[in-house]
Each structure stands twice: as C-alpha cells, then as structure tokens.
Amino acid sequence: MKKEIILIIGANGQIGSVLTKSLQEKFGVDCVVASDLRNSPNLNGIFEVIDATDYEQIQSVVTKYGITQIYHLAAILSAKGEQAPLTTWDINMKTLFNVLEVARLNNLDKVFYPSSIAVFGDEADLDNTPQDAFLNPATVYGISKSSGENWAQYYFLRYGLDVRSLRYPGIIGYQSLPGGGTTDYAVDIYHKAVLKEEFTCFLNEDCELPMIFMEDAIRATIELMDAPKESIKVRTSYNLAGVSFSPADMAISIQKIYPDFKIKYEADFRQEIASKWPNSIDDSKAKEDWNWKPEYDLEAITNTMIEKLTGQYK
Ligand code: NAD
Ligand code: AKB
Image (tube, rainbow, N blue to C red; front, side, top):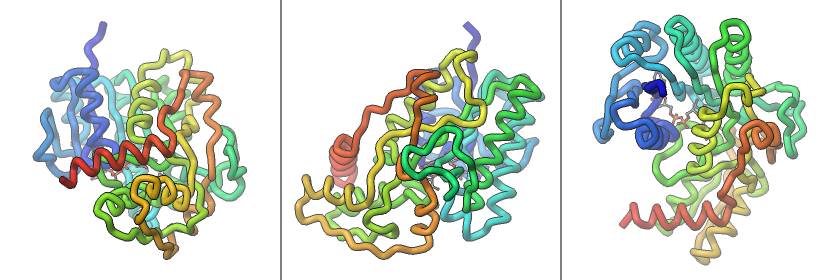
C-alpha cells in the first residue's frame, strides 16, 4: 500500500490541534506534518511554519516531505470575518487556491476542505436543511465557503483532483478553544459551568443551531477521507449533522449536573448571523454514500465536556 504523507494547514486551531493527533495515530507521527502561521511548541511531531497565502511556502513543504494529502483548515471564521470582510475573503480564497494549485501541480492524492453550515442563508429551509438547498449566505465567511465548495468541485471535474468536503456544524470539544465563530458560545458555556461562573450568552435562548461533538467531527473527517473514491457522489460539500439544540437546551442539560448554573442572554451581532443559519441539517447523502452516523447527543456531550474540563481545571 502507498505510504501517505499528510500536511495539515491551520493545525493550531480548534479542529487542527485535535485532528493532528488523530492523523498521527492513523498514519504515524513521522507521516504527519502540522503547519500554521506560528510554531506550536507543545506539539509532539513534525511542524512547519506556513502562511498559506504564500504558494511557495506550501510548495516547499510539499517537496521537502513528499506530501500526498493536504487537510486545509486555515480560514477566518464567521464572526471575526465580519470585522474585516475583504481581508477575510482574500485569506479564505487565496489559501484555498494555493492548496488546490499545489495539489494539482504535484499530483497529490487527496485534499480535505472544510465547509460550514454558514453556506446557508434565508432562502434555505431552516429545519432539516436539504443537501441541495439554494445557497445565499449572508456573511463573507459563508460566501467564501460556498464559493470554495464550487472551486473544490471544479478541480475535481476539470482536473480529477480528489477534493472532499464536509459542511461542519458548530464543533464542541474540550481539547481546544474555538476562534472567532458564531457557535463559540457552545464551548465557552462549559468552561464557565465548570468554573462555577455565570455565563452570558451572545445568542438568544431559543436560537437552535446544528452542532457536533469533536469526536464525531474528527471521525466524520477520517471516514470521508477513507471512503472509496467512487462512493463520494457530492463533490461540493456534504451536509453533516450531529445534534441540534438552543442555548436554553444546553443550560438545562448543564443544570442536571450543576443545579446552580446560571445563564443570562445578551444577544449581539452574532445573533443576526445565527438567525439565518439552519436549525437542523439533513445529512442523508452522507449517510447513504459513506455510512455517516453521529454518536453524541446533547446529554453525552454535556457529560463528557464536564468530566474532561473538570479534570483540566483541577
Ligand atoms: P480556527 O480559527 O480555530 O483555526 C484556524 C487556524 O488557521 C488558526 O490556527 C490560524 O492561525 C490558521 N490560519 C489562519 N490564517 C492562516 C494562513 N494564512 N496560513 C496558515 N494558517 C492560517 O478554526 P477551526 O475552528 O479549527 O476551523 C478549521 C476549519 O474548519 C476552518 O476552515 C473553518 O471554516 C472550518 N469549520 C469550523 C467549524 C467549527 O465549529 N470550528 C465549523 C464549520 C467549519
Ligand atoms: C462559525 O461559527 O463560524 C463556525 C462555523 C459553524 O462555521 N463554528
């Protein structure tokens, strides 16, 4: 079997720091190159500083290690992106174009490109949003992801590059902190609960959004990338569902463990972003094509988050 050498771009982020470890376990520490804008002193493994807006920096690492697959995670997320729309567009698109071109010109085997529920806007059904819903995203982040999905498909159709993609929901994990998204509250809330502090939520109490536990998100990524090429029928990006809930649902689930936990609501600009995103996602294509099945519901997420964070804060 061919030896795969993996490059992860944006490896220091919320997903990258966890995915790096999983890919090291799968492929071996010597076969995974983590990269980001700044060094990662605690990483046990190979690290290279790469600014993915610079084509040559990616190319030189691909050559140096004989990279065969790229996981391209670098992006500016929804809330932070609204602070600087044009810069966000430049970074999100330039990094993607560089990855696609490096992959094409070096005949890489596969590329992973994460998309997001942010591709949907108010033209899509909010409940059980279908795979093929009309996309009219309202944030620059969502516009960049919906465009990126089409570029992924273009490289597949035009050049045969095996680009695979998931529309991740908001990701919840204890291992890392989120960076600049609209769903970040769903991680922060557990940190406050474990610290026995009141939580101020920037979304409304009934704002239901699709979420997924980190373990499920990582497993989905690896299962998608492992699936036989012919079973990948969606070449833009697969809808992916974990579980859907509102901040009030989360508070109730935390109060089962900490009855004194308090939450108050002070909605800000992120509520406007969230109001145009789905409440829930139809991921039947992912189920059909590569047998996707989430494992964590809200209760399992709450129990695991509180157990793990309690250990971390000891
Ligand atoms: P993050 O913001 O935590 O991490 C992104 C990383 O990219 C950071 O470490 C940052 O330093 C790096 N980066 C930024 N610009 C770069 C550049 N020019 N060159 C190299 N690295 C650069 O994001 P995340 O939550 O880990 O998300 C990873 C990917 O998954 C993103 O593409 C995001 O859009 C997507 N996604 C995330 C979620 C989620 O809930 N976390 C949901 C949907 C989609
Ligand atoms: C964000 O809130 O921007 C991300 C996402 C859902 O893409 N977590």
